[in-house]
Length: 344
Image (cartoon, rainbow, N blue to C red; front, side):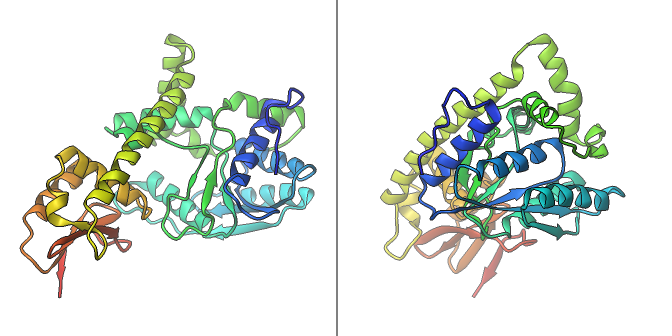
């Protein structure tokens, strides 16, 4: 499939869509491409829905929209109907995923986001397509910077990347709008007379991301014009740096590999500490699972370095660092399990 995303007649939204289709097609899925669209009913995902529907006129695409119903606000049922109306007008099948949000100590905002992503990841296709834009990218970089994230976290979102959740039904996650500011999406929707819903919780400064979006980023932009672009560019720079770290981890993985799988315990601990950490983070992301925090990673390595035999699993968050005899490896931790334990 050849897509001319740089053709001068294409306006920014369409150009972004075609560039994303080209990037996905290059990964080799069979045609037509089966795209699963996460659609909240807000302006961003509404633009994405209509732009992808328009692209069907030029390229073989099978679209399916998924709306996640959290049930947290009284407007939730009305949002379903708004999305259903758009999908019916465009001839796009809609699946509504009803989820229960159960805060697990990380807060309601994080729990809702986790439930939404798990629901979206359960729908099969060649790619899950999400509507995050440049302003979302800037917000994510700032949010993770304030949480003390390293290179992996500051790389933030990618325009096309392997699914970050273990067992995701769509192998690729696609974000066509990461280079576009939100104002471009709003203008596109207004030009076409589209309607969309507004989530009142987005105005609540009780949530850290909303506070950054509605208060801090506008202040930074007033003082430092273009700061959102700078933050988004930082994510690109960190992504390049992360690729270098990934390449080093792949070399170290081969160097310390155990014949029975995993790593040779002695060879692993001969690596400098920073390369041990890098290798574990790399292996964790390949499960895939979220990378561990610095504190958990250092403690897991400390315990693994002195384990006394048997099978030991040391918690890293979404994964375990495991040791048995001369072998060391990482594996996904069952949901809700967060403690070191010994098995026979």
